Image (cartoon, rainbow, N blue to C red; front, top):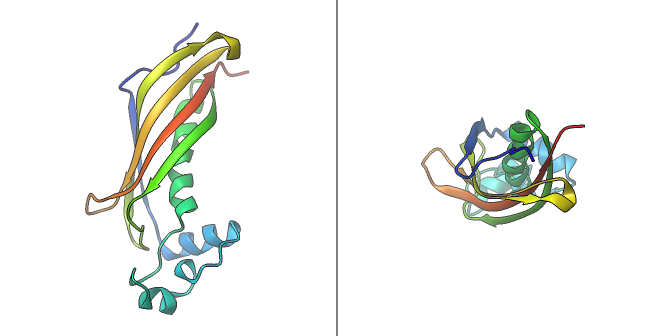
Length: 141
């Protein structure tokens, strides 16, 4: 069976989060919390300005798994566990990263189960999001 991932394999991407992206993602996901849309309300909050929604940050982190593995196989996300640690502010640059921690052949699914640990750190190196993931990787059709 082909091997699509290796233990210790690491991949990452850096992305800047601006106010326009925060508003657009929140609106597209029907999240109208003023913290994601209203500069004045967000400024008066404990965050001091616009922040990205949790699903926004999570989608960016989860999305890079598909992008990374799709170049060599057909990835399918099975499970993601997320811990939100710090708000992501408009203007932050996030370093999104994943490391493969375990790979198991899964003959009944004709692929590999790939376990990952992930994170999103802001410009200051603070952990904004910690995650684990489980993907099924199969040969591309």
